[in-house]
Length: 362
Image (cartoon, rainbow, N blue to C red; front, side):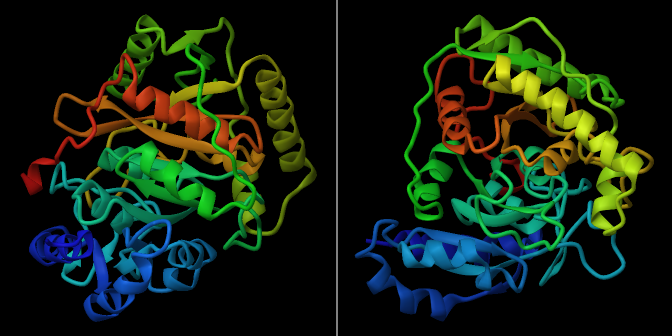
């Protein structure tokens, strides 16, 4: 009987020369871990790590201790490229498995591609401005950014939180208890009260992205999975504040902007447990770059505020590109957020069936 590990390694060997998700693949090291891993809770679950240094991350170490097996390091943006565009794999430029001419997003580029192509069920990531949620959205997989401070941050500014990319929210939910001490699952009770904001009050959102996400939200509401609550979530554009914090040079003006958005979000989560938005304002762009639209426009507000957020597949644009629906919950409500994501992906009204395969690997 072929093990899940051997299936994963064989799939990497077959698919990665075209997709270029991995910079390194650890065949023998992975096989050497198998016997011990099979006796542990994750039972030899193959996973990928973000970047060459990802094997040393807290998340990777905890997954290994629970019986996960790291099979390789995934691509991140290469030298001379913007962090929000494409990765550079061992065989060349990382491509989106849905459209070869489009970026998978960044910076967890290879992690998202590896999961979308079924090379692994799970990959690690870190999200400082959307680096888990954006590639998850553009590759049609689940992505979770944890509450700021829940897990050790790889970023001195605190903007980046550890995250996971997975074939499903259920897979992420299986793994999170091994990362967070005292974690207890919180299954959702449907319908979940939610506010939907197509633009957070400031972003320019592509009409087709808005159409897909609104359609997903309406389908979930019609099926009784969510209950839409009247109201808006109008934030100030966080770009200036995020850039100031990232540079280590916040000003009184950027501090006021950040505080104002925090007050708005605190008031919202006092009323409802869930905020829904598109993950990105635009569909996946070409490999030349994003043009004048930041893919981070709808994600980096929550890096500043510290809220947990996830990307759930919502559907497709007319030219076959995945679109992600962003789920945001109150600080520290990671278990509730994951419980909600699990309920929405398997329950009534779901848009993208689990296991839907990208064209480049069919």
